[in-house]
Length: 206
Image (cartoon, rainbow, N blue to C red; front, side, top):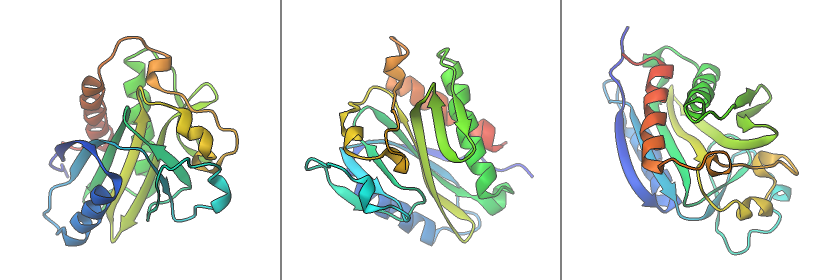
């Protein structure tokens, strides 16, 4: 069965909490024929702590707000210069499970980075995408009655210093990298469009 591609919504720069609340509301209210959506944004500085998040992974937040959220995973940082794509999807309609979705998202990011000659890979026991030993993309999802929300973040040209205030994704000493460390010329807008296209193809829309 072919599934209509998702609606892509460009939100611009946003505060985290209102977008999170809107995601939850959208998911609670959606019906069997509700279109899937991809929400594209960059957040103002914020740490988000997942459902399993432990206090010891917050080292020095330096006044940056910490929001306890309902996705999987530990703590991460969002800020300007980081591309965030929220995946509001009906997994039952797509005929895929959470593990397949995680793999599809990782492969879409890896394929995107190949366009910029950046060699990236995924790890089985540590979701996300890595270049060398450093993490360039994180993901955290929530499934409710077969509907997915939350999504992925890809570091483009953001300030990496706030990552030193946490154990990123719960891993002490985990290095973090960004596209601008490997590529001199790109536009955030172009990367955003390319990533959404890769996600749509990898997840298996018509």
